[in-house]
Length: 271
Image (cartoon, rainbow, N blue to C red; front, side, top):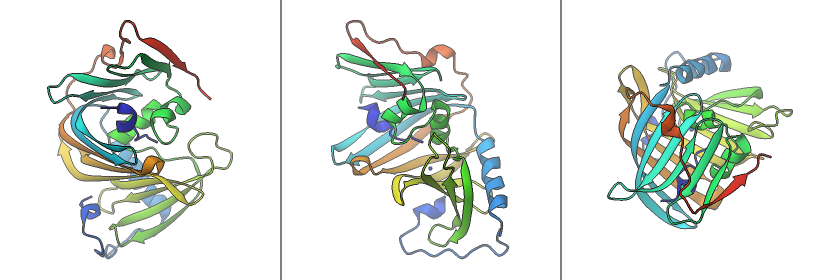
């Protein structure tokens, strides 16, 4: 399994979202009228996320390049520590992406090249569809997507989703993921959970992530399914979290991967 495709989350977002097309949701009896109040709900929800997790997932992906299905082991630890490992049906490792927040390594079994480099947003963006820091990518996988720096925000009730939709207009002077972009987030009225997020450039959606099948693991509320749509190669990716462990303490060595002997190291420069 090629983790270049499976980590296309990058970069770089509810039961209501799994409803049938055409479903209409009325606004709550006492809706929020201030975008700032809804943003505060969202920020509180993001802050409530787990700091580390061991996740066993099923991944399925369809794109112009074909289809992929398989098992993925995800080790995530804030800030910025991540290991995603594609597994064969017999649980053999077939591909790895690992970062300790400073450096990253990517390798696919049978390839002669092992990719390495700094875990800067432009390098992470080679494996995701938008430039994200490694910690932002961890946040996406844990159901806590980052909010972009913005100059203005607009809000409305989305009756098709059953949540508030906020449009964050990226700062013109920002050189990172916000520059020239709009982020849309859908925020639940009851608890501020983010049920969907999308990133747009010039009005066109580049990435759209829906979170669903939320459940409590200990005291943490986490999504058990991520549905990702990417403009790149018209990709649809689904990650189904079969097992979520928030108790295991992860050691630093879990996020270090040594390239196999005989492979050539390709250093990827930051832009």
